[in-house]
Length: 118
Image 1 (cartoon, rainbow, N blue to C red):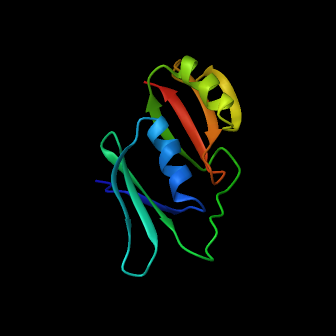
Image 2: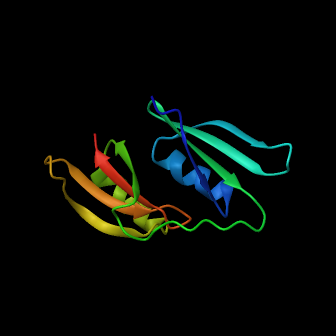
């Protein structure tokens, strides 16, 4: 069973705020003994962990094939709100292969995030 997936971030505060907007719940937000900023967000039963480490830069792949997928409720209302707050939409609202509403956006580091009505 997957415990968590961990990523680098340039701005931990912006990343935490972004995923909280998508329904994430912050479980940890602290500074490690090494002086790195670290946050863990619970999304359903899974966890995303982010580290902000000086002089380390995240390098997410820009293609949609490499992404994080999240179920959200009210995607049709959420998408315009995200867009208005400056979030980049890379694939606009469309039906998923299973017939649900879906869209792709970028998190603050440019990581692709699939939003699936659910």
